[in-house]
Image 1 (cartoon, helix red, strand yellow):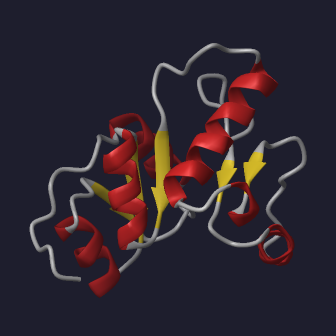
Image 2 (cartoon, one colour):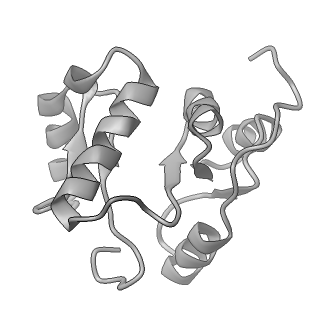
Length: 136
């Protein structure tokens, strides 16, 4: 994604910085030069995402973004995107994917293996709708 001319990338995670970096390095994610916000940056997921957006605007010298897409694999990710009016792309399969759809995610991918599908879904992502089922 770092090579895509129409997108910038940031990391926002509820993990503590050291834990997140360990996980990302184990998966061989190239995170050099990517703005990142961790649990230390806020008490809520909304604060963490806002911190990542703020760092991105500063790094890329922008006053705003035309569109923001949050990617996540949990219900709180869908809810946070809705609260912030961010488009959302879910990651999951089987029951997990169904749960994300029911929580309001329009698009859910199993993983990032199909790069063309990833970019297409990022372009099509929308702000999550209201939850179909509220008791998760």
